[in-house]
Length: 605
Image 1 (tube, rainbow, N blue to C red):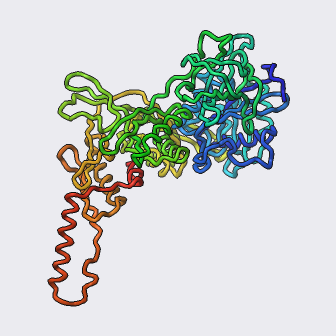
Image 2 (cartoon, rainbow, N blue to C red; image 1 turned 30 degrees about the vertical axis):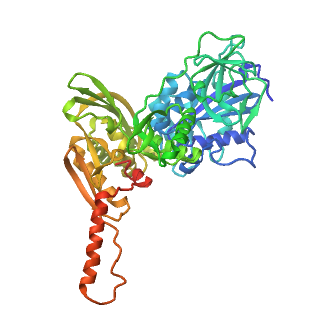
């Protein structure tokens, strides 16, 4: 074990990149080369601890890992690449002095490459540019390196070439981490201050916090949470390597964990500062800006008796995902639930899946909406997050919606199709920028990139926009967006009626000019997936009393005449007439059952 008293032997860094540029695989090779994980225990995506991460092949949660290499302690934090989990990246940056900027040798610079680079620069980190996946047949490492120099401003001799798959260049990268990333700057003699950058709940240890010690030393002395003004005595402290292992202390500049023993999960929050009771710091660390939800949806238990279990599930899930927000609501139709805030559609789907798998609560989720500002005729301004909150149209003066500055990186051959998609989603053209149109790239066979910039409403971006650009570009296009302004919009509430009964969970807010088209798509999807009942089910999409789309799900029909053999025709007619009257009566009294799967089928319309 390396002595922890010398800060000059500590390096804290994270890996940042666009999605699928090889962060997790590169982290695997680092763990392997440093001997943190032995060959027998090694597996692909070792730091991806959640089942959904392995199934989807993406990183969702940041994950720290402590490695020892050439008499140095290297604290790695692996981060997600998808835009919906950008808040995880920002938390990792605050715990580090350096960042590895990973660029795929085949795909080159992408949207999240630039976004994450911008975040790392703003955090003041030392950045090491790395061209990864140099083993691929489609790789053009020299051309990508030239693009990094010209587009991002790095020097040619700063760039390191690696293959996370074969391990080529990884030892050189570890050496560069030691020589280039600064040592931690904290004061070992100052009162203890440790930043909580992540946390989770353990049934035996209570809330377990991942921390970066900025000043002083953390031991099993009585500790104090500055922001929530909570005293506690740690029951365990230690480091995270291949697994967690216990230590007597965590010193200045180090990354580790602390099991607080606290059972109230609201007392330990990401961004809080831990100090010691007997030598406490007066000023907390800056912490993090609260993430602003971009998408809202209502979450209900599929079975009303699980309302209490859902409450506990969202509480505990929020501990592991600070970008997820929630508040309790009640629906006369669906019962007790929560209005939840998310950072995007993938975030919505991941939260739902994790709650169902990790807490065993089956859920129903309403269609996602963005945050609208509605000014009433009385000049009062209200916020609207769901169709149920939308006031009567006669009381509205005007409504505003969020607009994004959208950047799409693509190959030139997909330009026309992508421009059409942007226009179809109410986009306003800004500019087109061409990169890599130089002789070196063309000689090396690297396909040049084009950046498309548009203003597009957030409501359009969170619909099926991402899927469409991936489809027409055969997966090559990448997307980044930032909400920059609010603009007026003609908004209406589109109700869905099943058997003439309004279904609040299916209602949505839409632009008036698109209402009929969206209504037809909703009705068609419901007709396809709604199970048949004993009676005919009319499906209607309506704005107020105006029906804009309709379809019918035919009734299930039992052959009531099957047992008749011959005889007078009137016998069959009487049975059929009796059946028709019964179905008509059921249609008057019957309620339509909407299976859980139907909500999932229409979420992206």
